[in-house]
Length: 289
Ligand code: SF4
Image 1 (tube, rainbow, N blue to C red):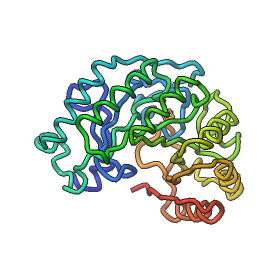
Image 2 (cartoon, helix red, strand yellow; image 1 turned 45 degrees about the horizontal axis):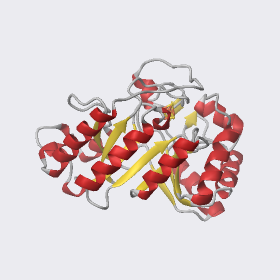
Image 3 (tube, protein in one colour; image 1 turned 90 degrees about the horizontal axis):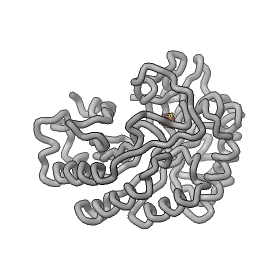
Image 4 (cartoon, rainbow, N blue to C red; image 1 turned 45 degrees about the vertical axis):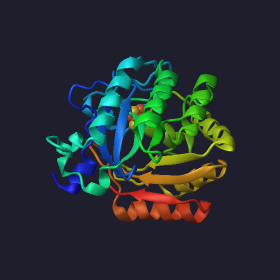
């Protein structure tokens, strides 16, 4: 496996673990441990580019009231074991990670991501508390806790409180915003959650907390998002107070829909440049390959 393949290879299962898995992540800049709080692959979105849906060979109807459940004791046990394997180097022996370059072997973050929206888990708060304790005990101070989220639950008080805990423990919230208009949002997310709800959640949350915005743009039936869509998207970004940076990327792996394809590097650069120019924000671009 080449170095390039290592960052493209993202299996969300490792050995006999149920909930945690290692990846070498471009957006994390190195080694990341994923925590999957959606082992049954339930989500309240059904994104047209979702790798999880592509692997499940079916388009599941997104539901409004998805709840998932995990065993926090097992999450913690598995995380302790995997962090131990990073710390003693055994993770990089006899596994596909043996080709990981030395500079990518540092644990950058523990990321709540996985096969669905993490904040829908009944044990979201409990597992964040436990992951934070493991990070403090076994990881370097620089290791972050990252939440990768579609922001659909930020209005729920218990979620907001948990996000505050996470931010206090060197946490970062990476929130998805893939559209500038309700129509485009519906096309991409195929969710029953209204676009306005997502925008309000992001805008309100960013008044008091920093966020990283993650946006995936792709070719849909050979068409890139048009200039007006990107202009509207930048207007939405300007409503938010504390954006640390924007990560703009395109699809890098198999999608559930044959009509969803990656943007070219030039198309992605054009969008990133427009966003930089119209918002003044830091924009990091991640190409298809
Ligand atoms: S929010 Fe994430 S997990 Fe849910 S459908 Fe979209 S890409 Fe897949």
